Length: 265
Ligand SMILES: Cc1cc2nc3c(=O)[nH]c(=O)nc-3n(C[C@H](O)[C@H](O)[C@H](O)COP(=O)(O)O)c2cc1C
Image (cartoon, rainbow, N blue to C red; front, side, top):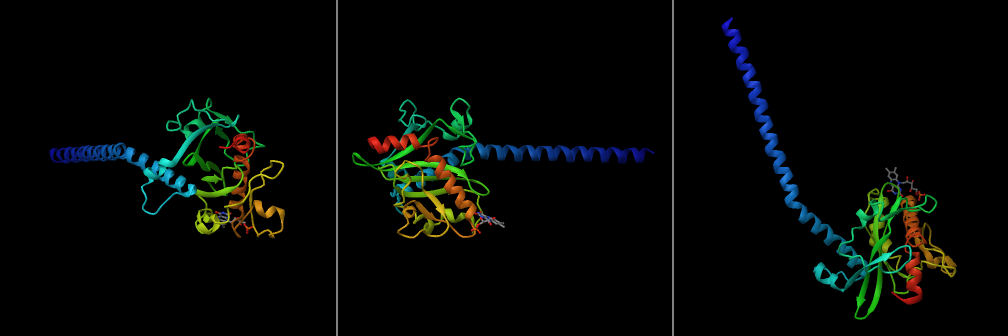
């Protein structure tokens, strides 16, 4: 009888000990993971900023292989635009402005009426940070952040316009979740090469720029507004058309670009 009791006590003790060891091991591991996340956070933020800057330099036409991103970024001037009036708002510091947080904050953002929400983003910030590429006193390009839904995901990119506020200089998509080998044509240089020189607005000021499968004949008046789509990936292409139509339209950068067309950037 005494033997059985002894055995049961030993069993209970060894279970308690195992649980205690497991508890301490998980405590140590979770503390290690948590402190690694805290320690690495500033580096992640710096890398994300560097990546955004690299993409801006790319559409600015200033990225050089092996170039120092932060140094090259010196000729880029970030500005805040009030999207409703189209005027610059210098009361907001462009370095401090967080477009993602602003778009989520009801005070700093607006709901996009469903019939206007071509890009399917739901809300947008009242302000946007745009970038002016400076060459001496002159602005050589205007860079606009754009985003919108493709087939599976929200695509994020930068569209660069010439200082006339109507001619495309370049475009880059730096983040998306479209299918590799199908919808990821948006990141391919060959497709990107079709954009420079295309026009955004027609003579009545309507956004005409679009992605459409099949090259328009050179004498077709719409060829100047049309970027070739990709067969088998029409839905991502439609997403790009929709986000362009939204962001360059009246609810997006329309008021700002009309001002640029009248007064210059
Ligand atoms: C697994 C899978 C992934 C797909 N991914 C994409 C995609 O990322 N983008 C896209 O436009 N179409 C994608 N498609 C194809 C679309 O469903 C659709 O067929 C295509 O966009 C239509 O283009 P088309 O009219 O040129 O054939 C995918 C299809 C499958 C089966």
